[in-house]
Amino acid sequence: SLNSARAALEPTRHARTASSRCAPTWVSLERVVAAAACNPPTDAGRRALPPRLLRHLRVLRVGTPDRGSLDRVYACYAAA
Image 1 (tube, rainbow, N blue to C red):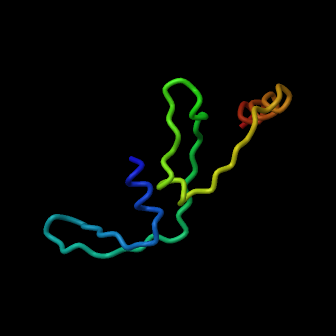
Image 2 (cartoon, rainbow, N blue to C red):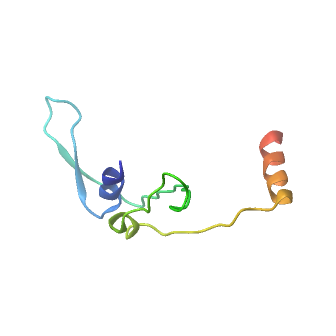
Image 3 (tube, helix red, strand yellow):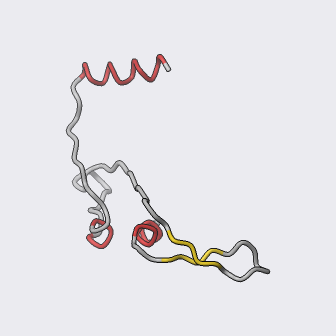
């Protein structure tokens, strides 16, 4: 969920329990990278990402590639 992703990206400690018999231990997350691909909020059924989540992210907008670029990308996938 978005709440879980936001919590993981915030600089804080998280409780981890190995089993119900053990006491929880504190762990810290470092160098977390989150990557996602989203359609624009103007597409049908989409909503803009909430500002509380966006403050933890860097947004990169990439335009639609031309046909030649798509052919090269998919040719590399097919060759692998």
